Length: 95
Image (tube, rainbow, N blue to C red; front, side, top):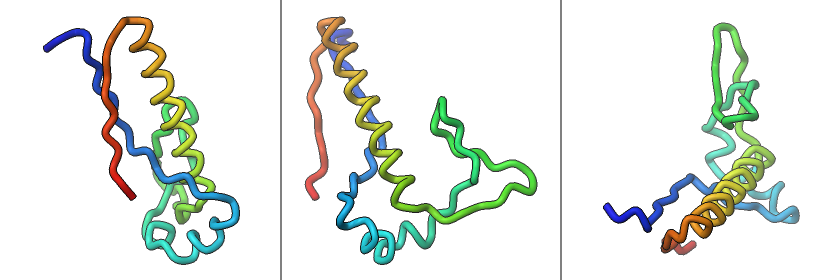
């Protein structure tokens, strides 16, 4: 494979504007069906569940934080690719 090409991937959760957060929280199934561990490793953003740890429902603030971390990761990867003269193309799904 050509060393001048970089592939970058992440979940890229949706950013939810402040004025829509309450409605999104109430209407989207994600916020009723996805459960998170109370503890999130800040270094890796990995969710971990240990014995007797309580779960809680996903909330809009979680997905906004995930979105911000993903955007930061993409920007870091773009900056690193530029320093290495790597080329890239971005493919984003249409909403």
